[in-house]
Length: 569
Image 1 (spheres, rainbow, N blue to C red):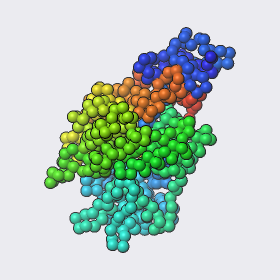
Image 2: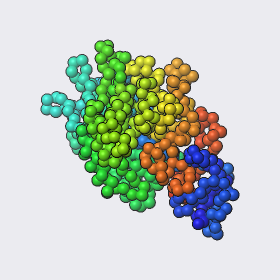
Image 3: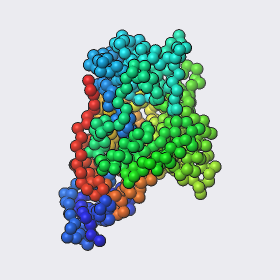
Image 4: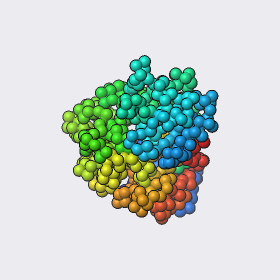
């Protein structure tokens, strides 16, 4: 057998522990048939073999983003993206500018991104502030965590029923509309995921763009591909229309990467409904590049908003009783895990605080006991895991649980206001070093949710942030962080840990290790040729490393993308 293409004179970092480096890779059709030395590859070169000189460049396996939101990003295309600021007056000025630029005729519902939760503290913003700026139409300003938002009075009134109450029907997490000491709605809403915009848009007779189009999603997908991402997990595949869109794109040869869908389980008591949806999607939308094998569930909210599940009462609770809450009982979570396991599917859980983490570990352990080791096959991934009690760190490796971490959060992008709730525990957040040392499998992701932050989908930005604990987009603040490093500094990850997590570990967790994750014979020829030697670049310069070109399924490609921190005002 001779190769179609041979890539020689490279420094291939394979992520294969049995053969971590090689200088030559041979490809037949889409697959690698050899990874070793140029001398050993001689017999695979025939008269029709194309030989490509990599010229000493470092090559890594195709990058896998283990948790991100391309559909959610695409659907923010119509929103007004404002400059980031922590200053309240500057924020209000930006909202005023947005209202002047995007008139009522153009945007009868003004939806702006974003404000930082810490700008208003744990009491949140108030609708009267918005009313002074925009009083001719409903307004929604999104918290940058995407787990809260802020409405003006017109929007609040549109959401009220005939009794003056707001009760939004939801199959997912129930939105919580905050009231003041007089029982009046403040305009601040936690977990505003379902139906709210639909109610407002129906009241004003206007509909923002909802169906996916190439214009909405291609800027992001091209950005992923341009930076070496050859596979991603969509951690919130919203509906069947989205699945249809991606399948059509794949059939036309325009998808350009592997796309792993998830099916949302809104409530652990609805496990069978989610399972049946997954099976239906498998039959209708699976392809060579599209898979449906995972159920997604939110077990708690965020540390910043205090709607997480904590092991001990929040520091800012004067009564010392409020620990937040989980969105499921442990018993219901156990039952759901058993059903999902028996269906042959996997489970991916949004898990934020230490109480939620412990409950997930306990439920997994008990569900496994019910089924028995012989019949247990479920892969459980706990995503985010911002705060883990030290006593639970060892359970990841012992139980065989997977962790997904969004690397670009490592420098303090999230979590500032969480100090009000967590007190000293805040200083121990985002630390996975003990888990890794004990053999736990940690993979990495971007978790971008809007075009405002889409530039953070670049995995090399994520790597730099995780290696330095400094956010390259936020101003350095020595008063906030000693040395401008998000504590604990000891939680900084190594390049080798990050490369393994973005390749081998993510492929393992997504059950794709037979196809990708390493550079070795039998795998797809998905590789990233880097413009710099990433092993010689200082940690604070890793974001300057990029894909010079990508080899996807054996063919070279260069994708252009000029995506920046997007603001449209």
